[in-house]
Amino acid sequence: MADILAFHPKRPDRQPEPLWRELLGRSLRTAREEQGGRLVDIAERAGISPQYLSEIERGRKEPSSEMIAAVTGALGVDLADLLIGIAGTVRRREGARRPAGPVLMAA
Image (cartoon, rainbow, N blue to C red; front, side, top):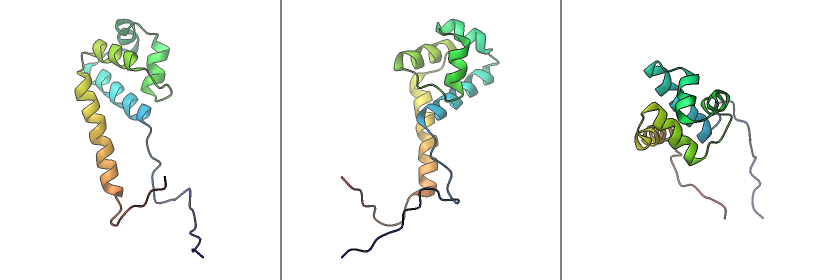
């Protein structure tokens, strides 16, 4: 019979995995703040409410691709550059936690 392995859902030595919407929101907020843009002005240019933009920036809402394009357009930020930056953030985090040995995944 197989050994039973303990499952530790909360490990104190690990940070929780960031959600995509949180990383996206941080990136959008950083871009806005670097430009000195006000939330209300960027939201107006994007055609969304300031409250909705605030929720996107705080990682509370999962915006559609159309909303992301509207906000990046309002910021004058290249969408590809934004996504590459987020991917780099994820990669750096993953690199620090990548297991040394083989990884088995259940189907």
